[in-house]
Amino acid sequence: MVLADRIGVFVDDIFYAPVAFNGMTLLWGVISYSLQIYFDFSGYSDMAIGVSKIFGFDFPANFNYPYLSKNVTEFWKRWHISLSSWLQEYLYYSLGGNKKGKIRTYFNLFLTMLLGGLWHGAAWTFVVWGAMHGFALITHKLFMQWKEIKLGDKKATNFAWSIISIVSTYFFVAFSWIFFRATSFNNAAEVINGIAKMQTGIFQPYTWSMFGLILLVIVSFAHNKISQNNNNYCGIPIQNLTTIKGQTIFFVLCGLTIILAYVGNTAFIYGNF
Image: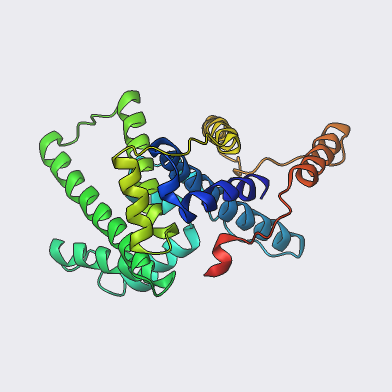
């Protein structure tokens, strides 16, 4: 919440008057929004899971470090898992899934994501966002089929290719977030044109976004390493509050949350949906 709300102040300024900022600041604003929506949504999902657990209800994780995804298909297995699972089971499978030929499979994928975008609101910007992800899923399927024909059982994966895949997937997702966040097509066009033309204007390297990005990278790769070493790792650090160390960490984090919390008028992003 601390990170999301602090970064949100910067993002609101960027999308309120994109023509006032230079191209690099607009690009940083788009990256910042990708961080804001993740911290905000993943954070309150974790809180909902934790509070529910106190009352004896066990809910599955809703996020699994989605910005480490190597393709859009993997992204939707890691992002908003409850929604993507619902879309798959009640829309994609109901439309026939991949049981009615390749063309129908692509159509079902595209329609599912289009409706997924429309679910967020009756605005064309949401439709475009859903359509972009639908096209991306189809493109990935076509690429995998081409790769299978060309390479067969061979795997052309290495560390460098993994990094390229993660970065390219992230930037596609971040670019699509512009339409999700923009108030109109004109607003989205101003942001995209400003970045493409590297327009002149106010330069504002927002430090909270940098701090959030560094923290996310460290935690993501630390989680990945721990998960490989421990199959029972749950993905959320658990502190033993019966120990001095656990209590110290707990109260330090509580104190930091209170001290650093943004006290302006903010609400959870997905409260709109």
